[in-house]
Image 1 (cartoon, rainbow, N blue to C red):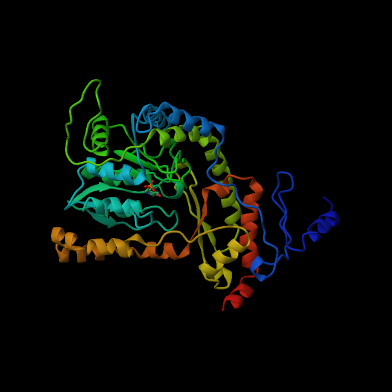
Image 2: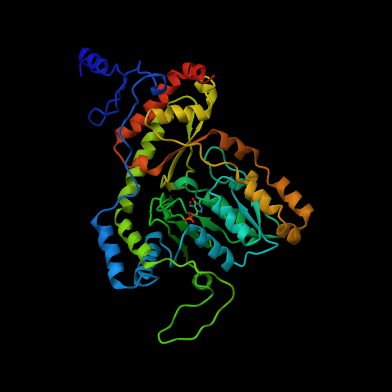
Length: 446
Ligand SMILES: Cc1ncc(COP(=O)(O)O)c(C=O)c1O
């Protein structure tokens, strides 16, 4: 495109509208366009790809279960388990009602209980910590690595005590935590690692699927997840004995039914945390698209990182060198207000949303969460541990690095990475536009 034509082309954008990518190259945007909050035209008006995605494959799958008359756990759940174990490169899989029940089942099956400590990150969905509290054990919070948003594995060894029963790190946002460092910290004391991979379907560490490294890995198939059946969960492991204990716990402590057996026998305490065949059939249908979607997110995520790295004050979450595939359940970056004329993060998010780019500020620190602290201060907990031990734990649980992360984080959701590359160009342009006019936006919010 000649310079004059190019100028005229950009001139047609003077109203502030964005333009899609020219061929395969980066999109061109008017450099004088004003942010939507200051009266400009939003960078984008169309919605990002909607989620979930379905077609006749799902209709057939669900109709099949409906017509089979077997609506509870049956052949579909068993088939899903075989397929998911194969996909993750593990020997066994147990389908569960949701991710929380997968985690709870594994902790119960590893005999986590009152008096035990479980190492967790403070930057995660509350379920990771709730399952520890449901077992009446103590959550011991280990710092987040501010650059990667993952648990800081270098701090795990220092948090281990004689009471540490399980290490429960989270593959956050679709990237892998530092698997090598976590396993190295756990090994000398033989402490089982349970991977919370609820956000990280198909993510990889050194070419192997996450969830397959520890004693067990847990997944969620809740509605927002990259693999979705509305609700659903799974446990994967190579440990045949553990998976049988998990089966029993999730089946009200009853073992697998054998042909012709009519007796009731129980192995201990359990609950009904089973997956239905509707969920399993939906998952099997969704799995036909999983790899293609994962590739698209991976490509778009890496491209967006290259764009955002160029913007002062925006720092995309770094991936550990061993993370060979990011599932990008979340696209996460840190926002430094000082590079945006002091524009507070909340105002930045509002301005971003006005440009047609929905974003959120992510998690609050779980170690400070009122419901968590309240539970630790509850009558039951003080009876088990005594007030002094709880005071000491709350001191140990301080994570200032994570507090900072919680004030700087910005998240985009996985569906935003499922469209064309030009969507990434628009996200970056929305941020650049806000930055160019940050001073005015600050005055507008003052
Ligand atoms: C990190 C993490 N752990 C556990 C869970 C719990 O999964 P579910 O909502 O399926 O119970 C989630 C889901 O939101 C999660 O993101």
